[in-house]
Image (cartoon, rainbow, N blue to C red):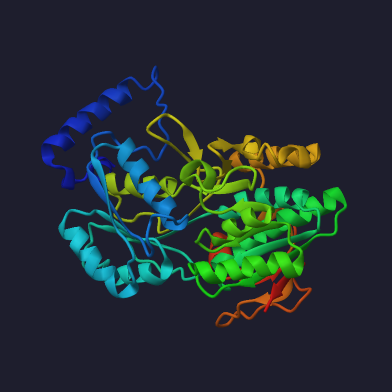
Length: 422
């Protein structure tokens, strides 16, 4: 056990000191209680977290959230360094990774699946390095090649409740990237929230999804946002893309916007709460701290699929505890994140439900994907051996939680009640 916690890579002297300290803690264990979580990393741990970002960082919510995560890790742990590369395509993933490793990187992340998967090819070559890649639908792993994703659908469900309450035309639009398990799963979380709000408020609500074809196409995203508003009378808009164009259109057209990946008002100063009703905020640092704690502990067989949600958290350097995902707006969290301009338009029962479900998910007592049945809309993405189920097919009954593996790799269909536009 001691060898596992304090491996030889830290040096014999340091290891001996830590063993002695551990014995003292054991002797005092009946009168002392640690306040640190299981994922805390020793203050004097030394490591380098390297993130390869598929896009630029500035002006993006996806890579921006990963970059903030790296900075928060380094801020909390002074002996942990964060380094990065931007605009990394699949052909550069391995060369950059090897360059970063030669400079001391001990954990290397590819922050998108298409450019992170090549790291698997060099995992065996660098046995003491942890490699990680975001999951889109592939779940391949190696002993030291870790796959990760947050349960963003939980916060998206809360966003859907608010969107359903805010729409007056009964039309909500999603500017989306392209059909993939990752995109479909997140959209489904949002749609289920909209549908629950519609049922509670006795509303007839339509959700329209139109795909752009890629993650970052600002001009095309703008065109689709305008189409959703002018042709489909959408008065609440959200996105599964990465540029600020849909937000720009929402502000210009005077409709509500629901943000993605980060607190776009509070962190970037994009628009204001007269347009942004709420955003969901992703704290990748919770997953990175988990990886870091296992690396520092010398874990030769780390957990290789990390799918953490609102009941997992990290204490930041300033003492703030943050769950993996949450709703956020203008630096406020929970129901306080609901725009003060939007709040008078939202019935109290919806606000109370958002607060209740958020608390239940943080406590690990409730999940929208457990609560609801999954009935296929007949649309989605055919996978090898897993075609999209026919419309009306109940794939999962209410009250049953799908496995993480199924959600991450096989949830390939839209839930019933959404319109996919050509």
